[in-house]
Image (cartoon, rainbow, N blue to C red; front, side, top):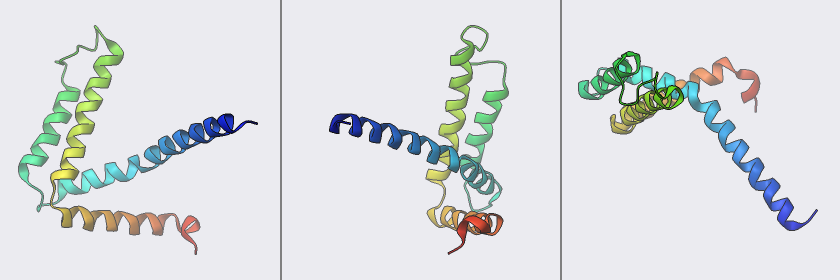
Length: 118
């Protein structure tokens, strides 16, 4: 096997692991978002942004109609929701986010004790 083939295999594996890591963290990101929405220390306007995104996703009115462009219409709805959730996490008070992240880590360690044994 040449060096170039080995490098291509390594890059391919690295991409797959990156995608797997992102997929692994999606449930934690959703938990964090739900916890921030319920937290009184997070701005009402950030929560309103997320609620507006959820209403937009379930609304029959879209920028890219689902019946004309089925895949792109759904993808556009999903992107708007994801960007609003990222905005919720990014613009929430850092100490609040940190507190919830630590709580989620503790929950995960308690739930998956088998994987966290030292």
